[in-house]
Image 1 (cartoon, rainbow, N blue to C red):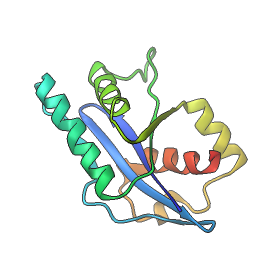
Image 2: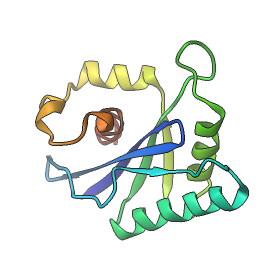
Image 3: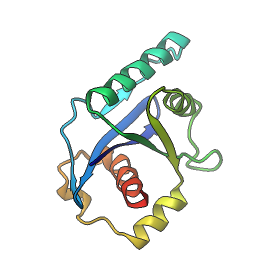
Image 4: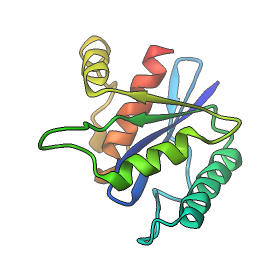
Length: 142
């Protein structure tokens, strides 16, 4: 059994989705939060609190790996400075593997192994779709 937390970073938020694969069967474990937010100040203490809150969530739900949907550094859909701070805070967590997945890698995996059900049937909120997709892709590449 492997439990992965997919993450999409948007603005001040880390949108999360837990996805578990056991015996070729996917499940979406219940999670007490859908996103973790960084306060507007972005101070060192705020970043440490964000990181600690995220790490505690991963520990509580016994997550094996965190996968983050990589943001572009240039262009129309480039990630903002705050999202890169959030990414760094997550990558620097101790005791858990954290990986980035590019849009190209996600598209390629979905072309080879499409989602088994439409996202609308997952019961997740619409804003969690990209976090769900990156968690699915991570399972397909493991």
